[in-house]
Length: 110
Image (tube, rainbow, N blue to C red; front, side):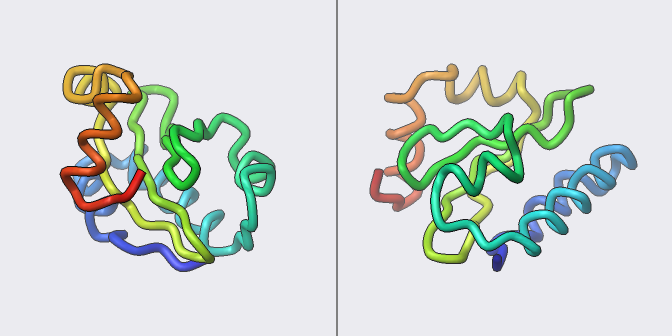
């Protein structure tokens, strides 16, 4: 699986050693994956949340609850946004309509 936007993920994690390790593990697992559907994603990451058909939230760490929002389509996973959980709740309010608006503003068709 190809990952697009990996630099944003590495940049977010650069000053946090445990997060860097989690990001490395995440990227290795994604790059080794060959997902075709939601069940395949859930096999690799059981706690991944599918928000829309192609949009998932992954918990990168449990300790500081860092999340990555990704767009997944045809063998490619694109990093859309990375934040700690407080920022996620502040900006997106854990609300599908707010998330949909955020994604549409970024040019994603959801």
